[in-house]
Amino acid sequence: MEIRLNQMCKISIKCLALLLSVLGFSSACFGQNPLIRDQFTADPTARVIHGRIYVFPSHDIKCDSTQGRPDWFCMEDYHVFSSSNLTDWEDHGMILSQYQVPWADSESFSMWAPDAIEKDGKFYFYFPSKAKTRELENDAPGVNGSSFKIGVAVSDQPGGPYTPENQPIAKVDGIDPNVFIDHDGQAYLYWSQHHFYGAKLKPNMKELDSEVFTLKEFPAKGLKEGPFVFERNGIYYMTYPHVANKTERIEYAIADNPLGPFEYQGVIMDESPVGCWTNHQSVVEFEDQWYLFYHHNDYSPDFDKNRSIRADSLFFDQEGKIQKVIPTLRGIGLTAATGHIKMDRYSSKSSQGYKFVFLDEGNPFLGWKSVFDKKGAWVRYNQVDFGKGDLNEFCAKIKTNNAKGVLELRLSHTKGELVSTIDLDSNQDWTEYRSVVESEIAGAQDLVLVFRGKGKVEVDWVSFGKI
Image (cartoon, rainbow, N blue to C red):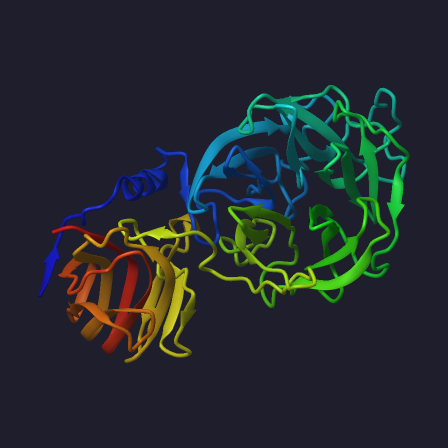
């Protein structure tokens, strides 16, 4: 049985929040890759704070001719995002801009990759920027040929706002700050500028407490940047992007102490075959699972200076070596069955007859749509949470073009249990269809949408509710 209604399907509060977000009335963003869906984000540092994941990324914007360097990275401020379930992401708003930093050049638009960490109830946000040309107190700019300095801003809350120090950290020239606190409470600062550098931090987290060490046990050829250090089972992992060939891939090395020497181990994520020249990563454990956060240019395929953050699961072998992470569109976290499930963020798909494209080329933040144009084409979306099994209505937003046939909803695979079907009209503009769910579905399930017919069918989203 199938009923077509020109009214909204029953949707959860989360679905309503998503609609409001698109209209600009909400600070909520929703999971899958990319994670943040209303602005460009890059260079994510993920931290677990008070049982939530907080992500501190940089913020790409589209520059005009008066902002920074044309056709280059343009970044003037920072936002912070958090989630309790890796699916629903809250934007805490702008926490710091270049106009608030006394020592930064407010015309450089160079608020690049940041980091943040908690110590003794305070939250410390580390960020690079080009410094003003005047001499800086206690430090001469460009000690090792860099016009970039690294500053610190402090807050009582992880979501900010943050108050910047009047001066950058003395004796630190470069970009991509990373802070690691060892088990004994000692904090370390790492950064990059042709090489990787490391030093101890004083307990105030604002000053160096040792000489600066050049970490030389890394590839000499090709750009390397973005150091990020974490510890697991007594092993210190240094992860970083490196241009071994033509674009950046994510590599790692290990040591038995935070300042090395480090020994190269291999590649965590291969260079992107298309699209994005850069990558930048962090690694975090959340609820007994490790994750790799990174970025790609999903929302800006023709301009890789506007990027978007992603995350995928990360695993170790028995010897502690990191297994290579294959980027996915599905990403991480459970998706609520009552939400708008974007099948275009798929886990797998048929080799022919299926593709995804932007809903509106002029506004990529509206997302994508699934397109089926061959009989038997299918797409699979993993890990949808049906809860206790009381949802009995299937809903989908569909557009057809000379299409005849049905869309089948199955569990697990193309020959899995058939739970609902939708009969398709020959030509129909975007319409929300409802059909009955023929069997009880509970818990976490993998969904497969299969096209049985001819012509072209486009799907914006699918969802589940109660009749």
